[in-house]
Image (cartoon, rainbow, N blue to C red):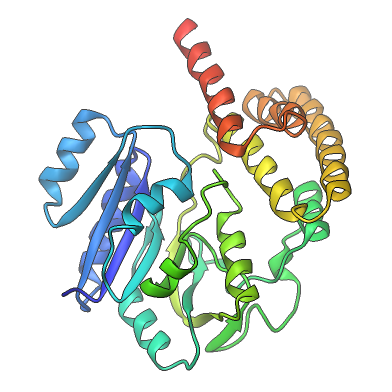
Length: 313
C-alpha cells in the first residue's frame, strides 16, 4: 500500500499540471499515489491527461465547486497514512515529499508539516504563517502589508519549527487526523479555507510545523491576472468576513463597511488606470459583501455574468 496520497486540484490548466506531475515523478522515491481533481476539464485535456499520465487517479469535477469541495472529492476516498495537499502551480526541484515525511516522523506531536515556499526565481515567498485576526486581515487587504513578514516565533525560523497557519499551496497531514477534522470546510469557496483549517487544528490542540530546509517552488499561476478574478475576489472577501467575524455580528458589519469603502476607492483607481478586470473585481466586492450570499453563491453569480458577457461579445 502506498504511504502518501498527493491531491492536486486543477482547473483545466495543463500548463501548470503537467510540469507539476513531472517534477513529482522525477523527485520522489517514497511510495505514493497521485490524485488529480480534474475541474471543468475539456474533453481534449481530459483525454491528454489520461494518455500521458496513466498512473494518476483522476476525479472528474464537472460542476462549479470551490477549493474545499474539489479537494474533498478526492480526500474522502484516500486510505493512505499521509496526505499531501498540493497546488498545481508548484514544482519539486528536490525530494520534497520524502523530506516532509521524514521531518514529520522525527517531530514529536506534529500533525502537519509544510515546506518553505519560494517564487519561480527562487526568491522568498513564505516560511510559516502567523496567526491572523480581523485587524491583520483588513490591514493586509487595504494596504497590501504582508502579515507573515511580522517577526514572531511562527515564521522564518531555522530548521523544523512550529507555525500557526498553513498554506493551502502545500502541506502534509496525517490522513486519519485530517478525516477527524472533517477535511476542508466547504463553506469557503476561494480562501480562507487553509486558515480556517489551521485555526481549527490549533484550537483542537493540534500542531502545525514547517521545515525551512525543504524548498517548494510556488509559481502562483491561476486567477490573479485572469478575468475570473471578478468572481473569485468577491467570494474570497465574503469568506473572510464570515471567518473573522464568526463570533460577532457587530464585527461582521464593520468589516462589510470597511471592505465596501476601500473596494470602492480601489475600483475608482483601477478605472482611472484603465484596468477593467481589477476595477470590476473590486466593484463586485462592494456589492457582494452586502448581499448575504455564501461565497459559492457569490462566485456563481459573478462567474455567470462573466460567461454571459463573453458569449454576447
